[in-house]
Every structure is written in structure tokens, then in C-alpha cells.
Image 1 (cartoon, rainbow, N blue to C red):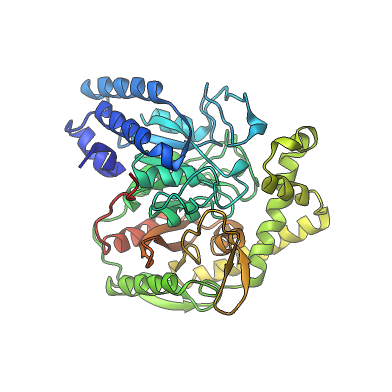
Image 2 (tube, rainbow, N blue to C red):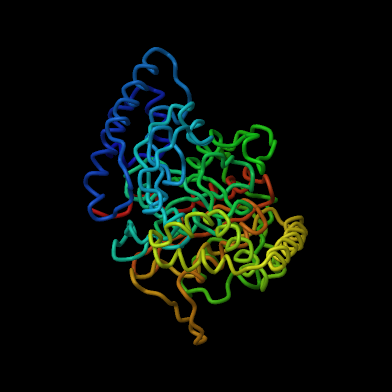
Length: 463
């Protein structure tokens, strides 16, 4: 096995035991980037020289007994919304040409303190306002969409071009590309991971979280990222927690909510079957399935857009007037539409969110997690604009991808996407687990137990 193939946990163990040097790992990942980038386009910029220098520094520190923990010397890709001092933050947009961050974002500073090595900045759908990331090809089939908006981060991890990565999630932008590329994506509880220094799409819905190869890797990354930061008004004063899941896969006593509405409406048969099999596997591990009804289902996506559209338009108000021609057409249309939403409609969306959160809290009081598909269909071909369902209804690709991930953003609950198999075309399927606010430990425990029932993980077969 080459170093770039190692999970974060496996790489950290070898580095700690001095069986792998950070220089070897970083060189292997950079070589892998050189090989796969021409086909995948996951990165906006690759910080090769800085990464090699940081790896040498990590090796020197570890040799002198200054080991900082499991991220020390491990290469990470950061979505290009996340500020790193002295590095451009383009948001994959011409609007940001020439922009260079003057200070680290909170998450970049925490990764730096943990000893992680920046491999580069990964592509996003422009300003995170989309579900496909058109600059980037899917790691399993570059002729299919990567998912978005954190498509570059998910593809880099799936292809071995980063050991782990960070993304952002406003309506599913961590979980959607994670599912479509066969990796793990964690959207934490709203406010658990600070967003200071991260370009906003919709301030009341934005989250930052890890994209990794295993659930344990997500737990290791989250431990370094979580914690209060007064510079983010939404940041929670939550206590430090060891998020690493238990090794014992026994789930006796865990109640798994199985939705009887919404999450299995207009879903590919192969995706639905994979989720049913996953629930059966959780039951075999001791969990108890409990049928649940998703409350206020018809209001979930309208509430998401009722919040996102005006908040995004407000963030972009100046540049939308001064340099509108620099935006991609799809993003510009969404931003202009957001300007048409009045204060009354925005306030109604805020009130709806409060009612939805209250209703979900009642459901989650009866179960420990909810199990559902991450997305209703696997990666569509590049250029495909719609999905037609067996009942004859047609839906845009973006609407299809956001529909099942939106509830966790509207409610702020944590959600984890875990690989759950492949369809007949060999494309990955994601299982989504949703938990109670600040219930990441339980979520990761269940995800880890399910992951252990699956075949050994392999990287996407890109060459």
C-alpha cells in the first residue's frame, strides 16, 4: 500500500510509531495529485513547496518528541472558501481574482496548531452556491458530476489526493459530494465548528466539517476543529469531547429512526435498497428500528431556500452591482432572485425554521439517530440537468440532490454520510445518519459500527 492510500487514522498511527515520516506521506500525496489532477480538477491551487517544508518541520518536531497528535504531518485539502494566511481564497470565482487572505480562519489555525500540512485549496461550486462543482470530475467517473459544493474536497479524498479535507455545508454541500464519491462526510451541529474566516453563503445555515475516508477519521478531524470562538456569533460554548467511536460494534439499545415519509419518496430503487440493507445491518448489530414520520416535510426545502436566497444576496450585494459579469450565469441568477425576496417572506422562513426545529426535537427524543439516503440518486452525467422519476415527475438535478440533505441544515442537527455500496454502474451510494444536536458521539458510533460491516475501503479507481 502506498502512503497516499492510507486513511488519516492509519497514517497517524504509522507517523506516531515512526514507521512513516510526514515527508514520505506528503511526497506520496503530492505525486498522486500530479497523476490525477489532469483528469479530476479537484484543486484550485496546490501548495507543493509549502507542504514539503511543513512536512520537514513536522518530521523534525516528531523526531524530538514534540508529537502534536493524530493530524501532525498529515496532508489536508481545504475548500477554497477557507482563509489561510498568505494564500488566495478564490471561492472558485473570477470575482475573487487577486484576493489573498491576510490571516488564518479559525479552522485553518486549529489545523495548523495540530500540525496538519496544507496540500492545497480545493474547488467549490462558485461561492458554494450549487450542488455539482462543474470544474471537477467525479472520482469514480470523471464524466459524471462530483457533487457540490465541496466537490473538490470530496474528490481529492476519494482519489488519494488528500488524506482528509474540509468542506462547508449550507444545504448538503459536504454530504452530497461525499456520497457521490464514496467517502465519509460530516456536517456537525450548527455552531460546533467556528466559521470565522470562511466565506459565507448563508450565515444562518453555513457549517464547516470534515470529509474523510473513514468514520474514525472524521472523529479525529472533528476533535481538532470543534470548540467555541467568540468571533463567530453562532459558535456554541460546547465542552471538549473525545469523538472517537468505540471499537465495539454492539449497538444494543440504540434506536434507529426509519422514516415512513419524505426520505424514500422519489428515490432510485438501488439507493432505497442499499438503505434498507443498511438498516437491517444496524439491527443485526443490536439496534432497534423505529418507524418515524418526518414532520413538516413539505416546508423543509422552501424554508431552506427562503433563508439561503436572501442571505446570499445580501452577502453579494456590492459585487453583484459592480461586477455582475464576473459571476457564472447559474450563480448570478440565484443571487438576483434572492434580491426579490422581501423581508416578510424572509421572516416567515425564520418562523417556519423555528417550528420545524421544535417538531424535529420531538421526533429525535424518541430515537437516537435517523437513517436515510444521503441523495436520492447517484452521480449523474456532466451536463444532465434533470432527473425523471418512475412516477413521471421531473426534477432538476440540484433540487434532487438538495432535497434529502436540506433538513439537517434547516434544523441544525448533525448529519453523517457513510458509503453504503454501489449501484449497477459502480457508482457510490451514501447512507445518511442524522442525530440530536451535539449528538456527534452517538452519530459517529453508529456510523463506525455500520462501516465495519462493509468490505475494506478502496480508493476510487481513477488513473
